[in-house]
Image (cartoon, rainbow, N blue to C red; front, top):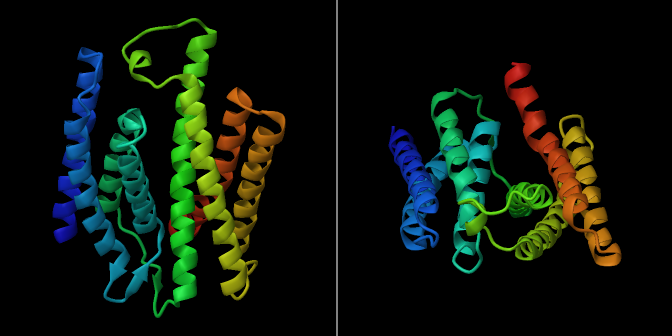
Length: 266
């Protein structure tokens, strides 16, 4: 019951922040950021309480699809919210907040089979934390890449101006921000894979093989992209394609495998 209350309050706040942001960007050239950040912070606060109670249960930690996906959404929102105090990330909220509200609504209404982990070691806890942080940051990078693709498309088709375009950061700033996020996410993903190989008994066991393989594929995608950007100056659409390719591999590594095992095969 408490989760229903916390989750519902978070949904309402996310939607209020989204509506306020949309109306502000439509009506005013200069966004008043403080109300969006305050409402967003309250939404993330209540979301965090709900996520904690979904994951931390009396029987142990629940690592099944819905609680963990909800936790990843919470982490993404928290990272973007904190980063938006010093970087122009508030436009990400237009897509992120409604998606988070939808994810919360699904978690509140859809039944799931708990996947409990009892007596988790500190090493495995570290591996899980690194994985969640890496996935969250690389998800933000993917959102950034989509916005960058949209800006590129408008520029090449000479669709200049418009209420969103005037409130978006310059293209160069967006690209610099994308690669900052990618580098941080890639380091965390590397540490996540290393701790997995060190502390898991067999990362290629039957229930982990698909996750390991797709995670490595994603790691290769991001590694090639960052090498190409550093050595060959890759940017623009090429950078966007490699970013989204790596993210698709990570989605298949985690969400795809859990979706099949928890819902399609039950």
